[in-house]
Image 1 (tube, one colour):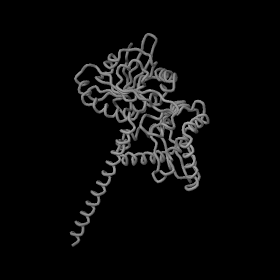
Image 2: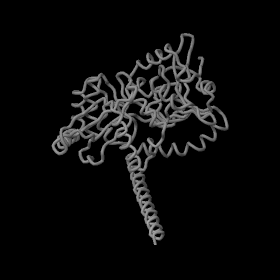
Image 3: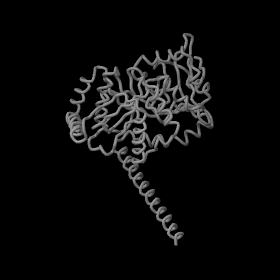
Image 4: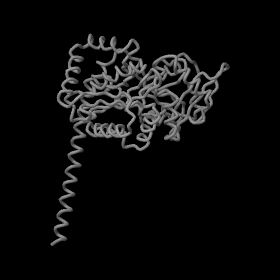
Length: 376
């Protein structure tokens, strides 16, 4: 096996065509996070983005997009934003992983959403889980009937809330592929508020992520869907599309309309519109959210772990990251632990918000007192 390392933008059309052909062999491998368009987009904003091109006597047999950070630490392309990672190639492709790392000048390659069926990396798995999927290949009507059978009460409740939203806020409409950039900015503002409200890191406070998301929407890889009531946006979702496969990415809603469950209404509308647009597979990403358990009717396995060469840098990375990975895996694997961690984060966010508000009030009072003293 030969390994050639290149920047994403230096790939030629023959390589990109081969990449797309390899992706077309199955819906999991066809995930938009594994598409050449996503790698090319990340490469515009991440100078450490690289692609390893794997070749044998027959030609190019695989691609591994990655990022190389300090001390030879490797991560999947767009790490921290992706719900699907791995080699674009046949699952049973065999090669020397450590030789690949050496060619990439990596001490460690860590992953947390790796396609678990990729045999070459199986020995490096620390944890395996499943990612939920909305399988729409039979059409929306059969999917909706499955959902009704799984939980008649849930589907009935969502439909009731949609009708109630229409009665109380105005006619409900849905746009599957909204091109207005103002609606994208609205989604990012909603999502930032959600991150702060729940104690999570605000991804949209990071300039390169905002630039990447904007670029993906502008180029049509990002599909922005908007649910409206009386002409007013009440929920939105930005996903990525690669042909018949979509990856869920950033859902958000206006908290003023929370009692109508606009996110759930929007997801059902999205499934119907996606099926009509030729999309048969929507990967929703891992996470302990109950709504995904209800929406899913399929799943695929993903893995978390690290491949490493023997080096001081790899040893330091293991000492630093292994305890964190074990703790995170334990929380994700147990709903009760996840719910408890979520409550802690929300409490922390409320206390932090109150502290900031108190600080602002104190500073304002101080400025006012100074102003009065100066006036006297």
